[in-house]
Amino acid sequence: MIFTDSHAHIEFPDFDEDREQVFERAQSSGVQYILAIGSGTGPHRLRAGLEMAEGRDGVYATIGIHPHEARLATETHFQELGQLAADQRVVAVGEIGLDYHYDHSPRDVQREVFLRQLDLAERSRLPLVIHCREAWEDCLRILEERWKRTGLRGILHCFTGSYEDAHRGMDAGFYISFAGNLTFPKATNLREVAAKIPLDRLLVETDSPFLAPLPHRGKRNEPSFVRFVAQQLGAIQGLPAEEVGQYTTQNFLNFIRQGQPAKPHAQMP
Ligand SMILES: [Zn+2]
Ligand SMILES: [Zn+2]
Image 1 (cartoon, rainbow, N blue to C red):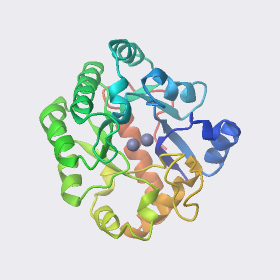
Image 2: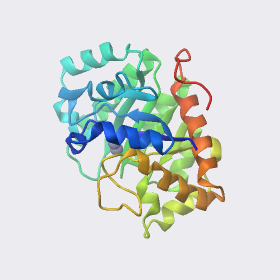
Image 3: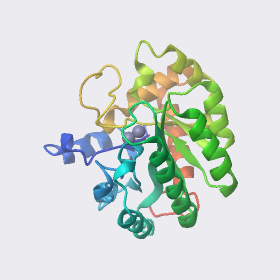
């Protein structure tokens, strides 16, 4: 069995006590690739993902300023992002985007920081990991106008939108990544959307330590639980979890090869 967790925050203090065991459990449950998201707890921690990827086979990093902390971004942070983008283990810029649910940063600041990071990603020829919550119209419009023409791809992470949103995203070159909320009893609409996404655009993720899937809902999430998301997606698509694991792993490898030479660990499963 082979699985890929396309979105995890393993540097969070939730894992300070047993981080190595968490990585070991992931490996022993077939999780061969993990994307360590580098937005950390704010722009003062831009190396968060890289630290997780260092010395660990199959763990790749992103760099980026989350929309929640957009108001904290300074010129120094943008410079640092530019330097980190050259690191071999950085495979994407993210998670970046817009969050109008929490509005932790003013919306115009969120948009400005989002756009600046799109410039950076394009210059560095890196694909995107997008966080979008209750901001679909703005987010998709920006991606259609600003990203589609680059020919680079991206991931709509922890997807919660409508099928029309997903369709617009796919049209602009994006993969649709589902998280643990796909397993929740009330997520009927989301499961209906997931049923219509073609196999070559699907990804699964945990968003660890958040959003643990059933049967672990409410507890700390970890990459080894990604198989429960794959199981649920398989049930929706009429496939065994192992096949979902294979397709989503292949999609992930195609994603990280974007604009980059093939890397030693990015071989076909
Ligand atoms: Zn997110
Ligand atoms: Zn996240």
